[in-house]
Image (cartoon, rainbow, N blue to C red; front, side, top):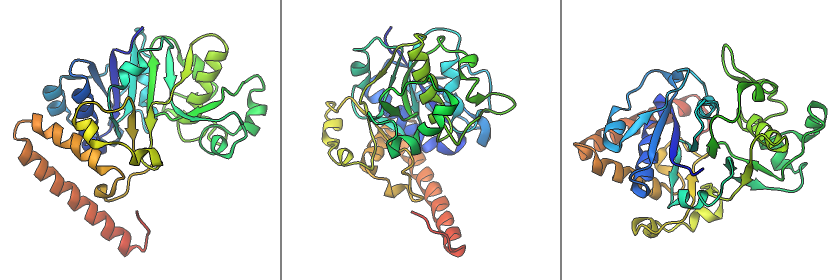
Length: 300
C-alpha cells in the first residue's frame, strides 16, 4: 500500500504554521489528498480559506477535543485501512518525500534518532526511561531507535485502543498514564506501542531518515534555491521545540517565508491578507515580549 493521503494536526493558535505546511505540500504534490485533524481544545477556528484554495478536507475524527499532542490518534485508530503521512503543523516539505517513502511497503515508517544503546541519555530523556521499562514490561525489546511524533507514515485500521490501553487513558481526556516512563506526551507511548506491535507481528515498522531539525548542522545545508527550482530533497523540516517568541527568529525562517509567500500567491487578496495577518501576529509577539520583560522572565 502506498502513501496517498496526508493528515495534518492543527489548533486555533497555529494557523500561520498550518498555511505554510499546506502550501509546501501543494507545491510538491498538487493532487495528493490532504486532511486537517482539527483540535478545538484552544477554541473553534475556520480553515475555509485553506480548504477552498488548496483542495483540503477535514478529517472525520470521532472527537473535537484531543489536547496536545494526541490528535494523530484519530488517524491511527480510524477504522478504514489507508496509508497516511501524518504531520504536525510546524512541518514543511523540502522535496518529494512521498516518492522516497513509497519505496517501502511497511505499515508505519518513523524517523528520529538511531541509537543501539538503549540506555543512551537522549533515548531515556526524550523517548522512554529504559531502566523503569524493565519493571513495566520485561519482554519489550528496544528497536535501536527513537522517533519523533511530528512526522510519521501510519496505516489506519491496524491498531485499536486496546493496543494503547496500558500507556494511554482515553476518557474523559486523553493522557499519558506513565509520564515518568514514557516521555513528551504521546512520543514515549507511541515509541513503545509501535515497537511492541512490531515485535508481536501486528504491524511492520521501519525506521527511515526523512526529517531535519532546524537546530542541527544539516539544516544549514538546505539549499533554498533547490526548493525554488523544484529539485529539493526528500525530507521534511520540523521546527519541533525550537520556536522563539519572535517568529522572525526561527532558524531557516527563509524556508518558512518562501512557503508562506507561495500560500498567499494562491489566495484571493493574498497580499493584503498577508500584510494584515503579519502585522497582527507581530503585534501579539511584541505584547508577549513586553509582558515577559515586565515580569522579569526570560524569552528566546
